[in-house]
Image 1 (tube, rainbow, N blue to C red):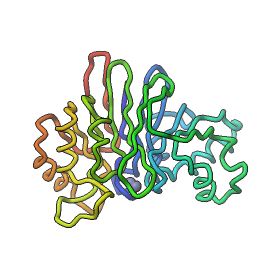
Image 2: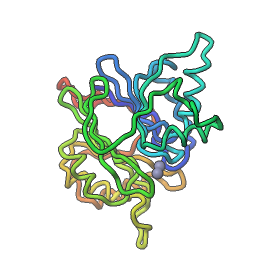
Image 3: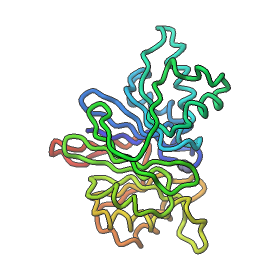
Image 4: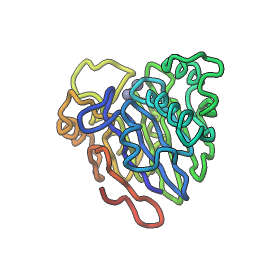
Amino acid sequence: MRMTIVGCSGSFPGPESPSSCYLFEAEGFRMILDFGNGSLGALQRHIGLYDLDAICLSHLHADHCLDLCAYHVVRTYSPSGAKARIPVYAPADAPARMAAAYGMPMEPGMENAFDFRALAPGTRRIGPFEVTTALMNHPVETYGFRVSHGGATVAYSADTGETEELVRLARDADILLCEASFLDRPDLPPDLHLTGRHAAEYAKRASVSTLILTHLVPWYDPELILRDAFGGGFEGPMELARAGAVYDLGDSRGPGGG
Ligand SMILES: [Zn+2]
Ligand SMILES: [Zn+2]
């Protein structure tokens, strides 16, 4: 499978990246995890406008879901005609919340464009992918993801404070995409976000191969997040997420380029 970082800016878009969006491709199937503000623009650098087959939303904070509104326009009002509905795996509130964000009646809301499916912890198949979700530790209902295909696995923390669920979800993954929103300081608010050091500690405990620090908030120098991560004891490769980076996994190719 191929994983592309479409957007990795935390909390709001930055000058170099939209908010959270990760594209997974295998066997011609295309799925995104999160659709944060600004990401629909950058997504068009990687796939065609109508090429998505499934959408997953980790939670309903704007920086993870808001471009579903823009994408509703794309699939509904295209000059080439309305496009087939595609599944949107999201917290159960998503149909009402996204309709409210768009400013449309709740009934029928976005049902013409999207087949909303409420997330719960567990494992399901989405296209060719095996997708496991687990509840993270964030002020709203939030799911972390584990996506596997062809013997390769990517785990994604979504937004979370400290939680043992992340160790289970990321166990032995090839890549852990772990949020690192906070600089490592005393008296950080609990149950909200992680630091680079936390991310590296989880990567070590879960025995992942590669750690990618993501959800990087533009008001911090990302090099300071990376510096904090070096204090977490993880000895594998570690890097900062970068919009446009592409990773080819499985089929014995291993993490690659970009
Ligand atoms: Zn966020
Ligand atoms: Zn959030």
